Length: 475
Image (cartoon, rainbow, N blue to C red; front, top):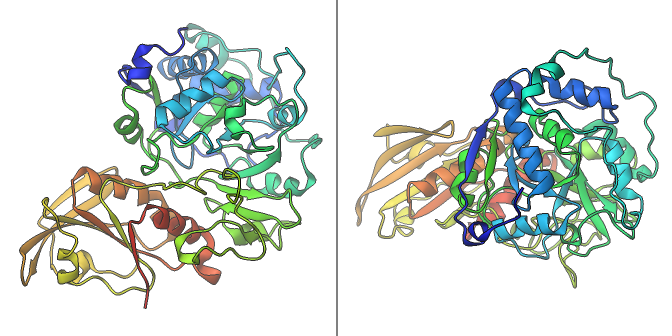
């Protein structure tokens, strides 16, 4: 298979979306998946895809590209769509940075399907020797999928897991949250199996086991750990559908595996337990109170900074950006931003007045509003919508708001709901949808992420603060 061509460099690669039916896109819950599988377990797991010849062919195509090409492949995870490449090959990993136009000192998270792969990555690499990352011996071509589908299903069990050399501090988290939206910072051995571009030359690396069945099957078939940041252009909102990926990266990658919309909607939580005090480097799909319920993590503190914290962190933890590159993605650079400026109204701000909204108007004459818990439709200045457009399973309502000096103002209104999990699932789609409708600005109602309310709200507000052009402080 060819390495990147002039087409990849020029951004003119043909980009194809390969569908995998949502029926196969189930989420595997912790305790229901064998995190230390045998070869027979791996084959049994992938059988759900092999029953459909076309789906199997799409998975095999993507796995072959990941093994042999330097052009990354986009695929669904439970958090957001990822842009994957073989984490052991520098040329492949550089393809991610090239496609995303991502800063080279921003480390990448490694994705695995088994503890066997993690144990291998934690051991020093043998010089000039290709490691075995899984029990798999490869995969049959698409025309042999029926044979795989007819194999008997073995009884799977985690049994007596071999935890060496995995740091003990992480054992409770792995038992409770893997597979799932939790990334662990691990020590990087010397010599390392990982390409230096994965770690941004740090002595640690981030790793997680996704819970989406499609992602796990792809990892099993590829037989390599995959470096996979979000599959968006750098700084843009993370993609939660295959079409989002294509909108950002068309011409820069060849293949997008489409398994439907993402389940969580924001990236994984990143934690570091290697120091004296465990810290959260990035909030995400696992809340800090959930972490504090695990042995050794009762005193975990916040180690990330965002605008609302005024540059201060909780406890004595550092966010790892002083004098070095960031220790985890999303800690240093502007992220999650649409083209339109985002105006974040921190909880518990009052809704903006029509006069205030007109101050954000420019030549397009349209304002986007993203509502959560308290703001009424069109922030109370219109009684009913003029039209309805469903975009990415979101309801975008249009309204006409009368103003004293600017006449009628067009407002596009999206309500995400009240629960943090539902807000997280629709947040990036809302920002993208309003941006595609060419609004002049996007006004967002923030939610409470203080004290006991943190949980998923912390992840939502962290992403919004990084996306915001301006913040309006709550009263």
